[in-house]
Image (cartoon, rainbow over all chains, first blue to last red):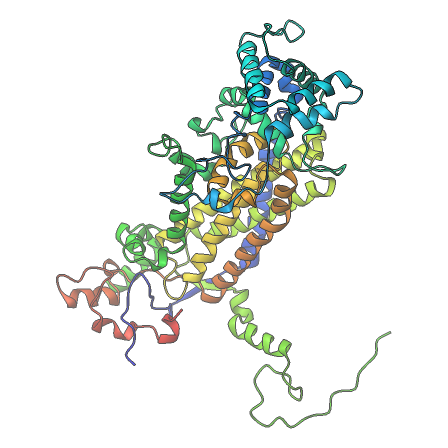
Length: 319
Length: 261
């Protein structure tokens, strides 16, 4: 069998030339000490960021009207979470696509969330000794869809002109039990009780913050804070973090796609960015197998700089 | 108390007893594993005290620096784990170790990316070293996921903002149905158990492959005046540097065992 043809981007002539003294253990030890000292210096000088998280309590305290405006969209099922689609709920047409395929829809609903029930009604029913509220919630739940829609619309219109001079002041309207429900939900949020009520675990120890985080993300309070901190998606936010810290600089390529069309204009921008990044990652893994791509190092000749002593010595020997 | 067992009775396994297998003992899985391991990585390859003379550049240091930074990342993370994920928010010592965790991660990625680019420009996959490249890139990708889950586990504004933003990307791939970035408990477990194990595994295999295959030799560059140069010049116009005629290179052609991967 004849030997395979030598390809310089795949094969090598293994080294049979001179060797030099090398102390692997010493190199690793010195590297560790140097890195440890560098890390200690950076940690001592720059520390690390730790901004307080937004809670439903802090949001409802800082922007009560915004909280209620968001809460009513959770109640009437028009909030971003309510209309998200998989994996949270079934919403016709929702779910980003790559071409004709929606991977989110294929995966299905695995974290079911009904914002009306989960974000508003169930938390309100946890409030103790509130028979008046309970009767209003029952009234809302037993009403027909058209009646509920009418109440929700009336309240949404009224809350747009609301203010908070120490209490929630909403113009009067024909919004039935919704006013009482929202006032109680706001009070619940401002007391901190809603944060606990939305934890997804029935156990004492809860670690799943899906519901409170989705509720908070539906409002504009956290988003406004993030914009001030230059963390929005169009501000290279995915790779930034609060304060003057490097953040996840290694996500620069992933974040870059969100700044350019069609990714920043498409309704399936996230799916497209991920598709591109998965493809590029696969290409990076397979560089040694891809003709042309694996020849780039030989063409650009940066290796001449890396092995300059070797080439100098070989040239000297040749002359 | 130490019990001394009598030496096993010598058994005649004949002259064909395999090297490395204890004479007189029927071959065991352990013995066979040892034979294979020592054959693949003899001690002088695993812990060398010499390197080819061409290994003379600062770029080679970045591999060891990456390993060192990884060690500091793991150690600082282990200290935080001793007191739990909320400790660093309420303790100045905890904050310091969290800062060490952050900055060692930053350095880890910096060193790793320089190492990766260096290896790219050396075409370090040549000569049966493709698996070394592949495991290195996989370690890089797994490291990104590990760092990402670390950001999600901080329990502060950064983690809640990043998780609520990142959910859309993860959900768009369908993975969000199973890998919920808003679930702190799930992300913390991935960050401190599963993903570090994956990164450690890839790094371990990568390092063993580096030790087994050695450091990739330089290109046989025509301008160096070596044999390749002579070959290229004999081949005449049209045969560029680094791409000599096949026949002229037969004496350098690696054996099928060397090239097959």
